[in-house]
Length: 76
Image (tube, rainbow, N blue to C red; front, side):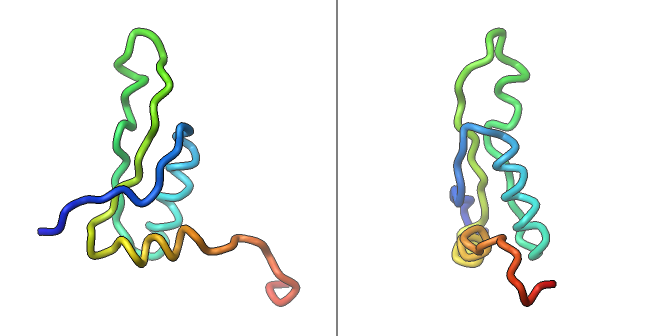
């Protein structure tokens, strides 16, 4: 079994969720580390969230996350 490695990190959970959705659209499973930290803390804290993927999916995931989302004239 391969280890989970971080492919993306952010202090904003919504950015992690968007990245997770992009990976899911390409059938790359991913997991959010620290997703519920602010739900259990008495006082909200500044916490980085991490998007984890398996080592074998790391390169493909990195490529997907680096793709440009801009719409070109050809897409119209």
